[in-house]
Image (cartoon, rainbow, N blue to C red; front, side, top):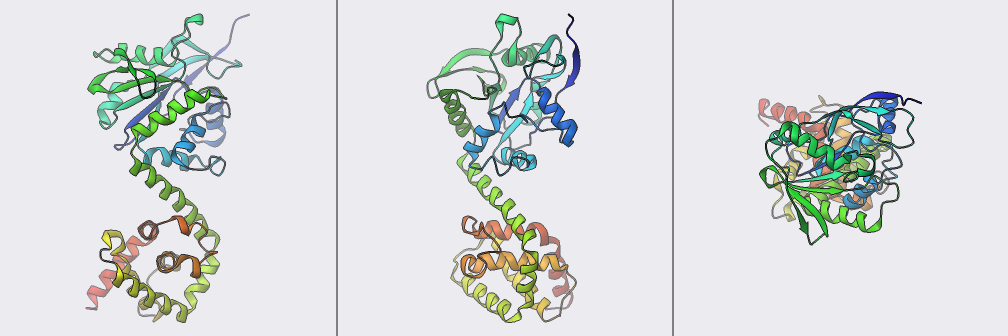
Length: 349
C-alpha cells in the first residue's frame, strides 16, 4: 500500500532585534497546522497537547499555562519580551497523511530554511536550541539536528565545530558562526524526562536575563490589569463622577510625589495627569474620550493606595509597581496627554 503525502510549509519565524535565544523545531506538526487552519493563527508553534514546550516556558517565565491556554498572543509576547525566538529548520516538505506521529517527513522532498540569513538580520542571538531528536538513524532520517545541519550545508560556508561538553548542564553543544552555541535537546515528548526538563530550564535561564524575566512578570500582570479595566468600566465611571473623592485622590497624589526623591521618565507624567483630571472635572477641558479619563483615574488610584481605594477594580494591583501601571495608562492616553499639554501652552496656563 502506497503512503499518501501532503505538502507542508513552515510558519514565519517569531523573532525581533532583542532575541538572544533561537529555538528551532523541524516542521510544525500536522496538529499545529490544522489548528492554524481552524483559528487563523499562523505562528502558533507547538500548539498541541503532546508537546511539553509551552509547559517548560511557563515554568521558566512564571506564568500559569492554564490561564493563557487559548491566548497565544500572550505566549508569543512572553517569549519575545524575554529574548526567545522560534522557527523551524525545514521550509517545505512532503509529510505522510494520517500518520500516528506528529512528524513523518519525507526528507527527500525537504527544503531547508536559511538560518544564517535569519541570524544576520538578528545579531543578538547567541544560542540556538534544536528542539527534537538528535537523529533517527533506524529510519535513516536526519531528525531535527540533522535537518539543521542539512540547512547549513545548503546555505552556509561555515561548518559546525564540536561536539564540546557543557559541564554545567551536562550536555553536548557545538559552535557555529559568530561563536553561537548550538544545543541539540528534546522537549517533543508528552512526558519529558525530569532530567531533560531541568536541562531546558537551566539552559534557557542562562540565555535570558533576570531583568527580562522580571519584565515578563510585569507584562503578565498588565494583561490582567487591562482585563480588569474592561470588566470594571462602570465602576470606574462611578469613581470619575465622585468629585470629592477625585479631589481627595489628587491631594494624596501630590503629597506622595513630594516624598519621592526621583520619579523617572514614566512617573514624571503624573503631574500632567493630575492637571488634566482637574481641568476635566471643572469642565475647562473636555476634548478627551471618557475611556481615557477612566484609564488615568484607574492608574492614579493604584499609585496612591491600591488596596484601600480599589480592592475590587484592580485585583492584581499588589503585584504591579507604580511605573508599570502608569506605563499602562500611557499606552492608552499618551496622545491625549500631548493634546492636553498643547492646549495648556496655547492658553498660556
